[in-house]
Length: 376
Image 1 (cartoon, rainbow, N blue to C red):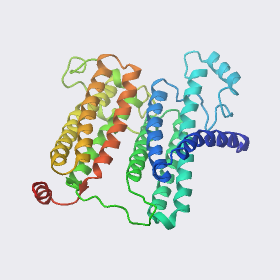
Image 2 (cartoon, rainbow, N blue to C red):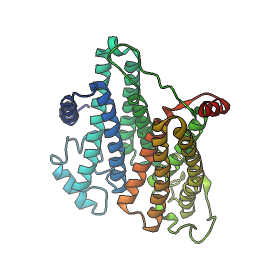
Image 3 (tube, rainbow, N blue to C red):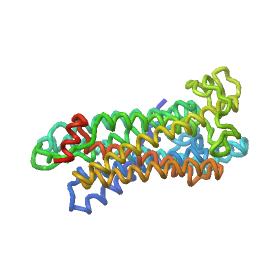
Image 4 (tube, one colour):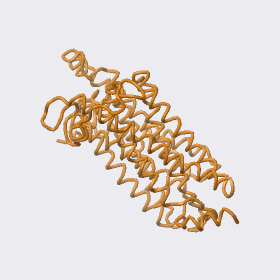
């Protein structure tokens, strides 16, 4: 049975959370409101991903074990009695008042993103005669993505933190972030459908797509490590348990559909399987660093000749890739400190934004044509 009072209360909360940044945007008339809203969505979605990592790493994902509310209410204050009973009966479990608030703030941020995307759809529909149909179609696609992301958020709770669901929840959040960034960096003017065209697109789109695939694989492996709590299964660096190639169990380590902490047979997952999960992410990080560094080097070289913007973002890409390696090592050496672990997830999100931004200077021309463009 649908609890309409709960839905109404959550709707009011989402309206308030979304209304505050909208009021701020209205007070900044220097730039086009629609464009400002698009970049605001990128910023808040990035914050949502980082706070989602904080929620997961503090074991707050089941702080409210139902969805979309907290024990049938819109906030932990109203559910304080139920939370106290649950905390008393399971003193070492995931339920505390603080964890309930962490989980609900994460949901409030998610509802804010959803409400702002709905606003984006209505704005693009209202201005369709000025900016064309493309922004409307893009906004509708973003609405579909955020709805899918909301579904995975619900399944994360109802399926009790099942690793593949939690992993895909993060992956779809990053897909949404990439889509929002690509949408925001388009030029939507108020003088018709005539967007300014970028003259120099010297970077190879094929190279960038392949690099994006490598980055996506590495992010999936990293999310799989985090959602299976396998970070400390190899507690030393550079070796894993004093071995350059530890004992592995690929079948159980990468069996996707299973409960948290269990294998497909329902038994506790083996240390070897967790080592495999960790080791795969660590080894593939070398591949990811090599490809991202090569893309950054290409961008820096071509950017110096043709485009300051490409040069700027390529330098950021290289810096972020190196920082990701550093925070990944720090997670092992310092035994998974919360701040560094959250930074590692935030770094992955920034890499996604950076790759999309660099894509603004990519084209499908052949390497010979690109080189000729750089030399002329």
